[in-house]
Length: 164
Image (cartoon, rainbow, N blue to C red):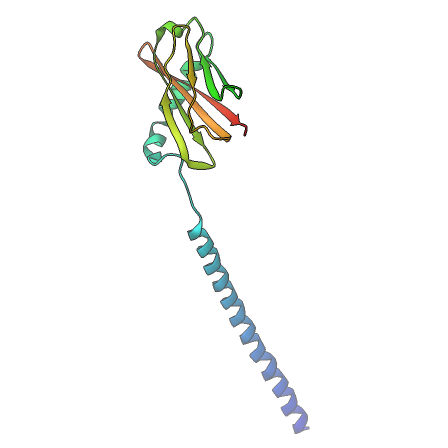
């Protein structure tokens, strides 16, 4: 009988030693997995739309006020991309066109920060402006149309898809 007890004790000792290896393998696997996730996260490119995003975030209330002021106007400017002429066309209504002192357009691509640019848009006597810029590459663009009128800023936002 002593032989049977010794063989039973050996199998218990063999099973308990496998538990230790399993727990060690689990911890090592978890640590390697976490190092892999941290490595992937560090290698991701995080582009902000604007380099001074914090200051822009602080001025966000001003942008909200500009949009609300724009909504109170009797009519809004029209914004159109002409594929035939490869240009953005802006037309201000007759009711406000004579009061506009400056107009600018900020174009940015959510997918490629390097393509973002701002341009002033000169308006003719009829309140029309055109932007034909070689930096307007095919793809999705967001456009902020900003103008000054009677000493206050106004803003509208538009989405533009430029086809190839």
